[in-house]
Amino acid sequence: MNSLSIVGFDSAWGDRAEGAICSITLAKDGAASFTAPFCCTFNGALKFITSERTTCDACIIAIDQPTIVPNDTGGRPVDKIAGAVVGFIGGGVQMARRSKAELFGDDAPVWRFLKALSAILDPEECRIANSGLFVIEVLPALALPAFNEKFYGYRKGPKYNPANRSQFRQVDWCAVIETIAAIARAVPIEGLEDWTRQTTKIEAPRKSHQDQIDAVLCALIGHHWRTKPREHSIMIGDLTSGYIVSPASAPITERLNIKALKISSRHY
Image 1 (cartoon, helix red, strand yellow):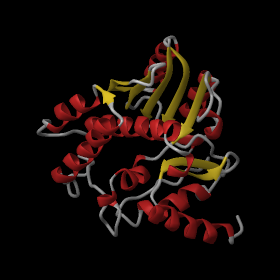
Image 2 (cartoon, helix red, strand yellow):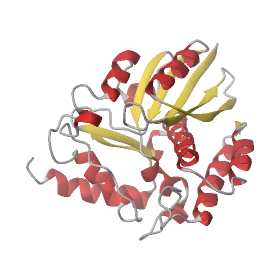
Image 3 (cartoon, helix red, strand yellow):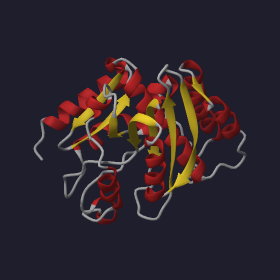
């Protein structure tokens, strides 16, 4: 048995649409290895996670989708706080609310997925647990400027979504992949740098390729949360109104804290 599997799941939020999933496995001696991403629905993700659990003592699912949505309207405080950074670098954060019935209503696929997993929704506990199944909410768009400081600055965030042809930049696509490759070399994570080399060669990237990159980023966020000192990460929000965990640099944390103070002074 390996000690830990960190699954990165860039879910598509919808019921039949495909996202992407991958994993980073930590052996008992600390060696890290990589299972390349592939496209899947929620059902496909459940099958993959079930398989991962048979080989590991503990499993962490780092998912790029809200997992706690108590608000019927508006947006969660955590979405607005994260937006202070993501918007600053030129991106956007989708506001999660229950009135988006297909995504967060009572019958939304994410709730069926979480029920089927029966996982523990406690980010702090999953940092130290030696066994069990955990789910943490992550956001690649927030993590990227922490993983690569060149992405932090006014409208400096990478435009690497091939579905948005008017904004997509091949140089940004390559920069995100190289950011992943640099982490793979530093950790190191066996097999991940080889995957980045193959991904860089894709001449006409599609949205599914970006989904796979985001799944890898989700796994790397989970790996960072689990293996790096606690002060190298931040948890925005709480287990009642919703949260996101992410790596964070000093300037990112400062901007998030300023927004959080403004949010907390308002009434909801």
